[in-house]
Image (cartoon, rainbow, N blue to C red; front, side):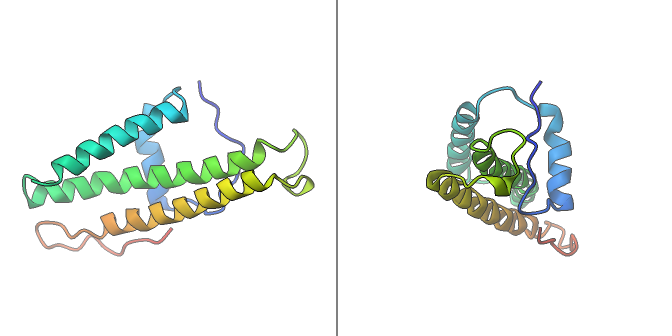
Length: 143
């Protein structure tokens, strides 16, 4: 069973993030990040190829709704990985402020936090796709 990292996010997850995590939590995976990233790249490539001819407006709405959750999961994953980069260099029982991480760890962590922010913006853009029936889904949260 995978252990949850003992880190805090620089960004508090929104309700949408938590909903995505609970929705997809049953699909926890023991595979490495590199294997999962490879699978993600394959799915992204297939999505790009299928996007040329969507089957209709209803399909676009469904895709946007699904991508909203997926982008939320990716954003939280980027934040957790960023924190893990810093925590990996910290000896156990030493506070985060007690050890200065290497320049490489800081740079990678900083870029992953920026990626998390960009993914949240993309998630919010997907959530703003209007439904086919023209009804408003409500205000899009900014988490």
